[in-house]
Image 1: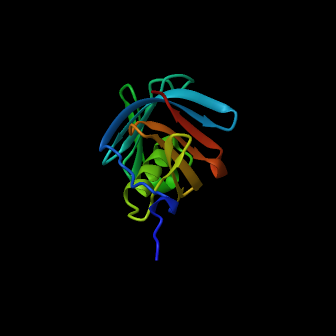
Image 2: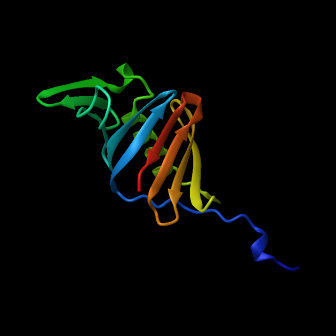
Length: 149
């Protein structure tokens, strides 16, 4: 029996750092804005840099969504906030990738490509081979997040 090692599909296990601080563009439908995104083990924070929400921080910790702008802070339980909220989407994608032992990536256009499902539909998450983040798309919800290098 001969074995041909080069004939199998190669898959990759995700490597995600425990913390990221990134600039990005969040797009849903025809609406988009620049933002800063902070991702840690315990939460995701999104701060719009353009639009009327400029300077507001949206934080999601898996249970509550907190909006902060200046001295104003208001928290809401997850159930009362729309699932397309950018902090929720990013939190759920990272959770799906990090907490699913069976998830693996295929190489697509010189990037690692992870596919999974979150509360608003299926997602595709692209990460460069140097471990920097490239994009998250959720076609069912018309969401595209592009990370700036």
